[in-house]
Length: 123
Image (cartoon, rainbow, N blue to C red):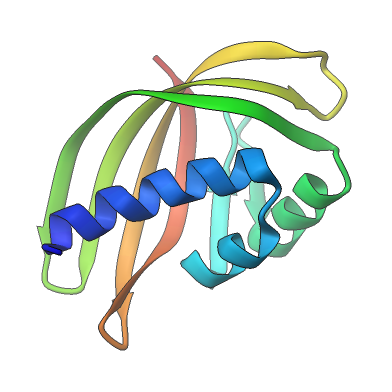
């Protein structure tokens, strides 16, 4: 698999793991210091996000990919922008489908790509 294919696969694995509440996979593909910046501007540490997925405060029902663009790879760093329609109930806000755009940054650790941080917005 090329670096580009690995990065796209990792992005897709993360989206599926969110829906599946697959915390084991998320722990494997996110660096320990990963942070997620939500649309509200709140920067959430990895462990808090995973805890909230596990306890249902963040419930993802589906994630349908619409577009992957702006893939940039430079040595051991990479990024992409992914656009998915995500059906979720976040912090008790009620079930809604969001047109979620994620800017995802990656880093290669010991020859393996991992997600280093993410920024959420809408499209």
